[in-house]
Structure formats: C-alpha cells, structure tokens
Length: 89
Length: 284
Ligand SMILES: Cc1ncc(C[n+]2csc(CCOP(=O)(O)OP(=O)(O)O)c2C)c(N)n1
Ligand code: SF4
Ligand code: SF4
Ligand code: SF4
Image (cartoon, rainbow over all chains, first blue to last red):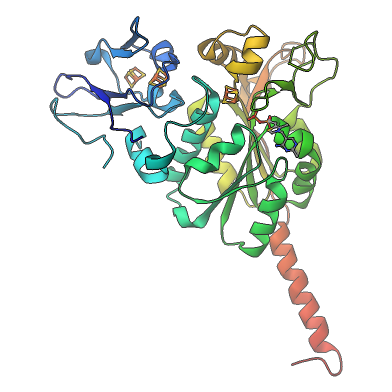
C-alpha cells in the first residue's frame, strides 16, 4: 500500500505549513494529537486525525518525528491547496 | 529537516511493506524514523550502510528499509554483524535489537562485542518485555512489574543496560527515550561517527503487552511517563543519588577512544606477514 493511496489533504491558508494525514497508514494512536504544542490536531469520533487549526501550526515537526507510522507530513511554506510536494512519487 | 514523505521515498521499501506490522502507537517505528533522520543528516550513502537485526518486533526494522539488510536469528544480530564488519570494514554497520534479543539470549554476544570494541553501532530498543511472543518478562523488566510469565510480579532485578555495556567495555554509551526524538537523533549521529563499539539504549513502550498488563495506559500515557522520568546527564550530575531514584539519566553517558578491533586485526595480519617474510625461505 503506498503512502498516497488515501490522503486527507486539507485546505491550508497560504504561507502556513501544510499538514497531510496519510489515512491508510495512520493507526489512530493519538500521539500527534496529544503532543502538538499548539493544539492544531484533533481526533474525531471516527478515530481520524483532523487538522482543526492549521493556522496555528508553527512547523515544529514534532508530530512527524513522533508518529510511529510515518502517516503525517508537515510541509512548510505550502502555496495552495493543490500543492503535492510532500507526496510520494 | 527531511519530511516524512521524503523519508519514506528515500529510505523505505514502501511499495511492498507498508503499513508496517507494529501495533498502534508502538515506539519502534518512531525510533526507526529518527534513526533514518540521523543517517540522512550525516549524508551517508545507503549502499555504505548495513543494517542488521535478530528476531522480535524490533528485529523487523531492517525489513522496511532500503539499506544492505540482514534479518538474522534471535539473539545473534551481533555475531552476524561482527562477521560482516570484519569482511567489509568500509561499511557502517548498525544493529537494531530488543531488550530480550540483546540481553537475554544475546547477552553473551553483547558483552563480548563491547569488550572487543568493534566499530558497530547497536541500538537497543528497551521496552522492558518480549513484545513479539506475548509479553514474557525480559532481563530488563522492572522488579515487581508483571509479565505473562510473572503475573504476580517479577522477582528478578533488572539489568541496567547502559551500566552493563559500560562495565563490559563499550566505548560509547548513550541513552534516551522514544519521546525525546531530537536527542535520539543527536545521540545516534554521534554513535555512528564514533570509532568503536557504540550502544544507544532507547527506552520505549510496548502498549500491547507491557503497557496493558502493568496498566500503564496507552501509548500517549507511556510517552508522558518517559518525558517525566528522563533527566539529562548535565542535570543529573549535580543531583544526589536519592534525588535520582526512579529517574532515567539520558544523554551521552560514556565516550572514549580505545583501539578498535578491525584495525587491530589488520595490524595482526601485517605483523604475521612480516614475520613470515623475515624468516629464511619466507616469501618475498
Ligand atoms: C532461538 C529462539 N528462541 C526463542 C524465540 C522466540 N522469540 C521470538 S522474539 C522473542 C523475544 C522478543 O523480545 P525482544 O527481543 O525484547 O524484542 P521485542 O519483540 O520486544 O521488540 C522470542 C523469545 C526464537 N525466535 N528463537
Ligand atoms: S508541526 Fe508542530 S505545531 Fe504543527 S501540527 Fe505538528 S506538532 Fe503541531
Ligand atoms: S501519530 Fe501518526 S499514526 Fe498516530 S494518530 Fe497521528 S498520524 Fe495517526
Ligand atoms: S507487541 Fe509491543 S513491541 Fe511488538 S509491535 Fe506491538 S506494541 Fe510494539
């Protein structure tokens, strides 16, 4: 299963980091949500990671470094909702 | 800093092997990811790395990455790695091993690798239990804690891995946790650059066996515990032993230079050849 097979690519305000969740790899452990210093992320009732406040993201990358499943990606200086830079080629 | 997608593209056998087999929240994937970031920061060529493991959940790590990899038998990662390093000393040899793999069945190999000071970097994923086989106690299970083979509490005292390898002669010893990812990257970088036998002990969590049977909560709770008990060596050095009870000292604990095994072996080969050549009738 590739990392792109199903992604949750949320609209990101210009010049804010773009956060992508690779749903097929995410195991809903909640680590990214629990340790984000800015409460950018939330867990939905369906156990999906929701990027609830992308504008607060400071691109500290802690969610990426701690995710045991390589299922979250933070791309700095994304320029629009259709940027695919962070994805698998 | 390299993003997760870039890391996956560059280092993983991602088309066949993912998602990986580790349980939700297990620390093994986190340690592997930060090991790869350390390697990336050092700009090492993938072909110059050999990544060796034994058996266990930790032992699965090399399966996922695109280095030269060896997935060997339980407890024997270090003997395989030793042979490999002697045959191909130009390779950077890294070993991933669980606490059971490294200190129970492989305990003898560990202490002798330390004593030899062979240039191998060994990362010990210490989750205090045998994860893969269903939560039997390991040599690092804390006294009094439960496992599937000691349901009323462990009556053995645990090894302190960092102290064990220091006493056995490792010339680089670092310890951190799977919570402290930046420190983990830094220590692994230094361990790889160190000439000689280096050990990085990473305190990590197995929520499925150790966590469940000891009621330690989920992966998030276990990471919070790691954050709480870790204390950096620079601070610990100024504290009394009593204040350090229940704490885990992290950082680079030992770093010293001593003659390395492969280099000494080369010297012996040269000495033997000189001896042969100097004898009457010896080849010129
Ligand atoms: C010779 C041999 N004995 C026993 C086993 C069964 N076995 C497989 S993994 C394992 C222990 C795993 O624990 P650990 O090394 O701590 O790694 P973890 O799974 O916790 O990462 C054991 C006993 C085996 N595979 N081979
Ligand atoms: S990069 Fe940092 S601030 Fe942004 S979502 Fe991840 S943990 Fe939160
Ligand atoms: S840390 Fe990774 S696997 Fe866990 S919930 Fe977040 S994205 Fe999913
Ligand atoms: S059993 Fe434990 S060590 Fe093994 S993958 Fe699951 S959580 Fe990780």
